[in-house]
Amino acid sequence: MSEQSFILIGLDDNRQQYFPPQVEELIRNGHLFSGGARHREIIKEHLPEGAVWIPITVPLDPVFRAYATHREPIIVFASGDPLFFGFAVTIQKRLPDASIRLYPAFNSLQTLAHRLVMRYDDMRTVSLTGRPWHEFDRALIERSPKIGVLTDREHTPATIAARMLAYGYDRYSLYLGEHLGNREKERIRHLTLQEATQATFEHPNNLLLVANSPLPPRPFGIPDEEFAHLDGRSRMITKAPIRLVTLSQLNLGACNSFWDVGFCTGSVSIEAKLQFPHLSVTAFEIRPEGEKLMNDNSRRFGTPGIETYIGDFLAADLSRYPRPDAVFIGGHGGKLNEIILRLSEVLLPGGVIVLNAVQPESKALFEAGVSAAGFRQLPGMQLAIDTYNPIEILKAVSPIIET
Image (cartoon, helix red, strand yellow):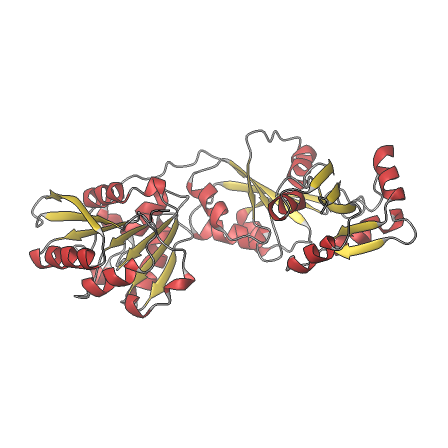
């Protein structure tokens, strides 16, 4: 079977597209075309008589099944540069052997920067088009001074601005481009984040976020007294020095997914997200008060994106969350063995579990639990702070599956 062949042509929102002679000839002699509904509206006057159109809609499986029934080259119209979070990347992932010829336009963030006469070689780009908040949250936590954002109908300029303000990222100005390239509808606006939360927008749009004053550094080792505490009980928190040593034992720089079981104030989850913004962080707490504590503290310290589960960990549907390669057990309610055995079902090979034990009983339960689960216990360490009882940091690793 011969490889499939695609010709990708980038468009802006202009209803009077200009194409170089080579591209005009490809379209004129083409038969099989594809693209989204907006692309067809833009390009319809250029299509030859008898053109066959394969609409690109979500989900994409039927689209690629339709492609597979054709051996002739398929001319695909896409927005901007199809290699910039675009359809060319999708084709490469699904059909790695496909032949691709590319005729890109400027991507929309380039076009917006051009309109503003703003350099963009220092811009961090994030796509929220059909994607979760994770990479946008990471850009904020890492204090990126200039962020280009591709939006969709859910992640709008208003919801983006509201999220930034909720987590304290208020030192940005917002530059918005709507219908870029459309001579009748194009509009460029400069808004404050507060103004953006109240404004209305036309689609398609994108935006540039530019810091309008120096961004504060990320804290490292948040003072305990700065957290909101459970019923004012300031001792119910993993103390800052212990917290940082615990995170070092979890080796989070090499991880993708971190679980915090029994998060209480959320201090470990929040510190982990601040120091390792690439992480997916999932936090579990049985006490209903934990929901407000995590909500308040994550906003106080600018850590969006921590997913929380309130309820009994042993009753949770763990399949809903990314499997962890590191777990901290901050509370166990006397069910440590059961929790470790449950974690053994989901912890990735070579994954790490850490527990901070104050009482000898907790240490004995941990040792028995990891042994029953087939984990390898590593040497621990003991720390003491001021007048608090010494804490032993215990660590175990799940077996690595031989292939």
